[in-house]
Length: 268
Image (cartoon, rainbow, N blue to C red; front, side):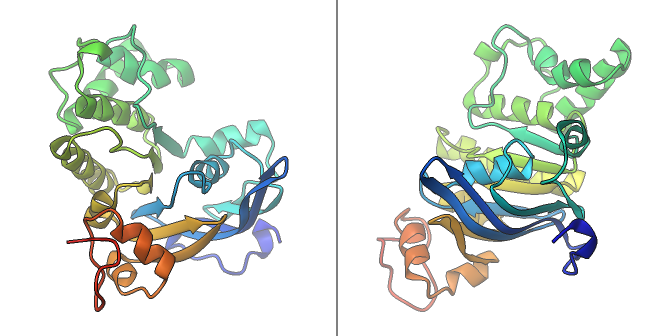
């Protein structure tokens, strides 16, 4: 199958994955992934540790090549592309890492401007203008001169997101964005993800273990287990599932209760 004979193309989906396999030595991580990422929606991938969520996202950005299968980004199969061709595709993506991954020796303004200084030839005043705009969107307009070490966990996430969106990507990937945050900061990050999706019209892909956050903001939820997508649907569809593995995984968090049956995991 190639991009030209992919008859299932649908403009609702920005990324489509078919029969994706990846092994590292004898460890078969992805075992035939089929996945449709909806354009302009918040798509959340859940699953236990070591199930391949981060490996899958690295494939979506072309940072890893699969052993088998296809990844279509806006209808283009990126698997056969060389590194130069992939650089153009990667410009569609921005990523917020789990720990924000800010440079400790830089101010907020310097951190956010870094992608512009590295990947464009824009003049200094234009870079400052774009950085100020993104900081204002995320409520950081008075934080330009702060050092990374002065930021709270939630504020660091917002600075990391400002850096991720400064090149105006179409797709944002969030790697466990609420890990290590208290409940208030977690809710603030959830709001940040939802507002960014709404105001910028980006396609969001979130890797998450946080079930409360997942059901608070997701448009669509996918469960990755055993190297395959074993369930997917809207939050309401997921809450009607009969998939026992999915029910146990979600309800063990104690924050979500499924429809129609008693809780198996102590949810309230």
